[in-house]
Amino acid sequence: MLELVREAQRDPGALKTLLVADELFVLYTDGLAGRNVATFVKEQIYEEIRTAEFEDCPQRIGGFFAWPDLDAAREFQELWRPGCYIHTCEIEGGWEEFDFNLVMRQRAFQPIEEHLQEVRVTAQRYWSGEEASPSLREILTNGKVTITGVLK
Image (cartoon, rainbow, N blue to C red):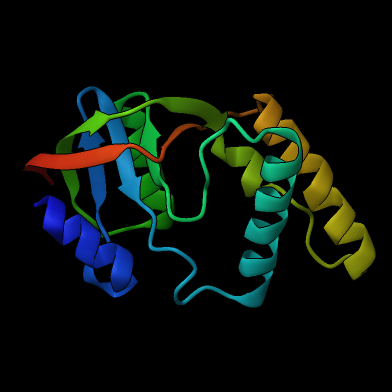
């Protein structure tokens, strides 16, 4: 199964599922494939802020995403990945918790300079561990993930 995950890292279309790590509920990131330019730019800004100010935090791009409980995993699945499966798995390596809703909460239809500044401020809040209201906590890991089972 781990080889399937590695294959998915090379071909993002190969695995579009939710994963569960011990008692964490994990989504394999499909990278930026099939996403729009705004998502790509936003993730690049998050990575720029992370490397400059929070270098000990795990990367979002190429990392695995987790949720602290099944309800949060199902909420993410319903909103962002309908039809995906949830898998049980084990994680080796560290992880940190952040608020996914901060990533998704930039205003639309504003001048590009204002939007990019808002993304930068939100990225700093995200990496600092702040929470939005309502919050959808996600866990990031760049550790080794091994799939051990499947839930629907």
